[in-house]
Amino acid sequence: MSSPAAPRDAYVDWLRALSLIVVVVWHWAFTILQWTPEGPMPTSPLGFTSGLWILTWLLQVLPLFFYVGGYVHLLSWDRACARGVGIGSFVWRRIRALAVPALVLSAAWITIGVVVTIVFDVTWMPLVVLLILSPLWFMAVYIALVALLPVALWLHRRYDVLALIWLGGASLVVDVVRLRYGIEWVGWLNMILVWGLAHQAGFFYQRIVVLPRRYDIAILWTGLFGLVGLVYSGIYPGSMVGVPGDKWSNMAPPTFVIVCLLIFQIGLVEVLRPTMERVLQRPRWKKVNSTINRYALPLFLFHTTGMAIALGISWALLGRPGAHTPPDLYWWLERPIAILGPLICTVPVIALFTRRRAARERTRVS
Image: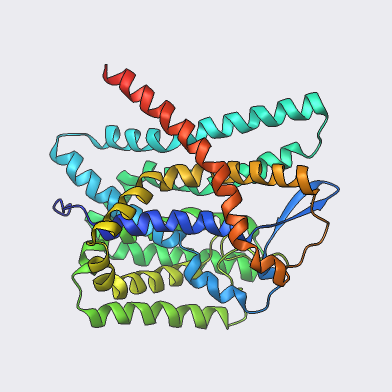
């Protein structure tokens, strides 16, 4: 049976928005673009700085986002079901709300790329468009999970926690086939298995919330021990994001290590829950929480557009970066500026988008 409808959870809103904002800030602050004969190529300070990968255990928060998303979808479905909405209509509305802005953004940048390439003979423009749109892979996976929501709900009702065990086991088998036998293509099945597990785990959110605190600590340590064991087995890389030079990646496609990261992060947010729930009741924090939830998704959608605009202005004024730019002390000190520039350039794009969306909604209502 579906869980009963629950009141709005401010902590859930906070986690969902914060997950997207962390991804945005990571892209703005820690992307190093190297100019090559083919055009701009991204790399990361993780490839230059020893031991920095440990920060990704906290800053790679997509598992947490999918987990919270699963809970929100279950809660929304319970409420829609109580109003008599069918599962097909519910899923379609969710897909449309997510897909339309992403498709509009993609169409705009593809059009710009084609025009600039043909008119100005800029051969590296398709690479720029690819870099700008590449973060939308996450939206594509998320939309796929929404489309599979009827299957996920059936698994949850019929098999309960066994569904998580099967998804985790299947993702581990995929890793064995990929890493042991070198069949690379099979690894992409984990885009659905691993992220589907994180999404499915969100269906158990309310059960986890009511657990005694000692269980929260146990979940945290279980995930942490799993991370340490797998990473130091020598099979998996330590970073939870792709690092140039690593033989394997834990994210492209995701590996079973991400399952352990999910368990660790679930435990961590539950350990922090009592403190954060008190903080989020304060008037100023309520306002902050409301604001970031309103703009987190548009910020994620358009943050690479703002970044491209900021970099274009910077390169026009200061020249293009060299072919090799290892991070030095000056690079680390200017990270706040690296965030400020794209933010300033993203805000007008979000304002334009939200204004047009609000106008369409007013027209639809009238």
